[in-house]
Image (cartoon, rainbow, N blue to C red; front, top):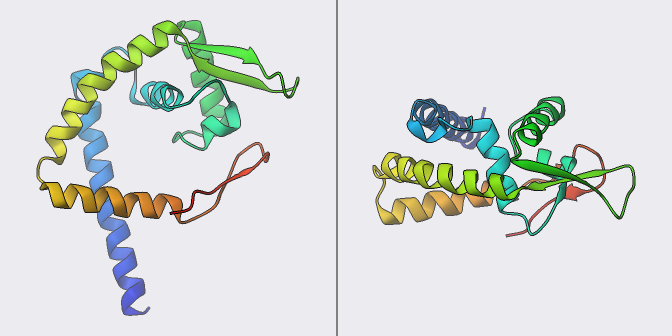
Length: 158
């Protein structure tokens, strides 16, 4: 393996290890007493949308299988945090959006979680935080990601 290949793998391992450690730490904190991390992931993702989204689009942004996401959305609908609505552009599709209660829950959990994230990231100085943000954004934008329902491919350009 080339030096660049070794370095790429070491960087990936360090990034993955850091994410795993932080996720374990966050799971144990009080921010997720009302909703699980996976539920919050869906609520947060929906809160960033301008309107309702297809399940396939939502699936590109959360760390769940399509079946797992469908079951989780079912639970959130039963709890009144998410609403399903028909897709006017495609009668076969269903759109999902935050309900008013879901928006409130996302904001409450989000404030607590944001404090925990800031505390965990405080080991980095301002310049390191900017570099990490920029590098992670570049990595996220660097590859095409097919939407699970096959309707489109997501790719942002830097």
